[in-house]
Length: 394
Image (cartoon, rainbow, N blue to C red):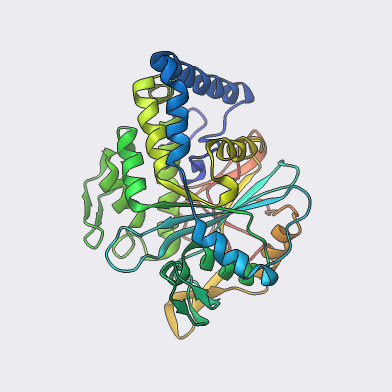
């Protein structure tokens, strides 16, 4: 892709979280323009509703669910938790739950978002669901107690919800998790449908019978059900690894974020309110984020991170020798990464280079210097075994 080419909607490097990071690298003036559009949309919504505006705010605020069971679990084991990070550094755990799928709930997606204390950088670290970890003794939402065991990470959520997942990751990383946010499958589907679907372009057919996904090559406007199938598909797509699935999630969430930032949503009160209503109804958060005001404060902090200073990567890991379908941490690389995050140090990268078989990526000199982009977009990191998905531009 040359500098004159239009942006690829499926470029993994353009993934940003819906709740605040930027959808694509733009000049500061462009970012301010998007914020003005949000303000105009909200103003239009209040003008349309008139005196009902306060009632709508209360409705949105009341939509947000607080995870009281996680609060109780973490308070119960406060003495064993790591100390808070230095200064204003914050760590937010984002969990995608399959609570509405058949069988017991598990965490389908786990991302640790680290905000540097000076808000000049951020790192989003994905943890594969098949990563083998030591899960502590946990109390479930039904009062049942699970014994400590070595198992794959996504089981922790089934044993004791977000509280057990947080305790597992805190033991693994020695990093204090300050906040958490959960979205389930139904909420994800509803959000995609609320924005009118999300456009994706596939150069080849996308098929996975286990996910009930069968789309021909070309451009598609994915509805909620197809979008969920796409981000969950794994068995028959790519190499069948969790790494490939994580990259597809980032591709899709990039396109979803651009749709949320589009003027068709932000300047149309009749479309904006259903999106806000769905988004706030779809999430469960810790007590520290349990209001619209507090959630907005987090959004504002995330948005202060300058362009070019947000890094997306997967925790260093390697195949588990007895079972190649499971991962274990690659050491000492994982501990090196955890120490950087724990001490609020920059997570640095070497000059970009192409990983073997990545489809021929290239360097792209953006606002903050060289950044690597590729259709499969994996970058070699100094922390061997780490996948850096997409580019580092915020």
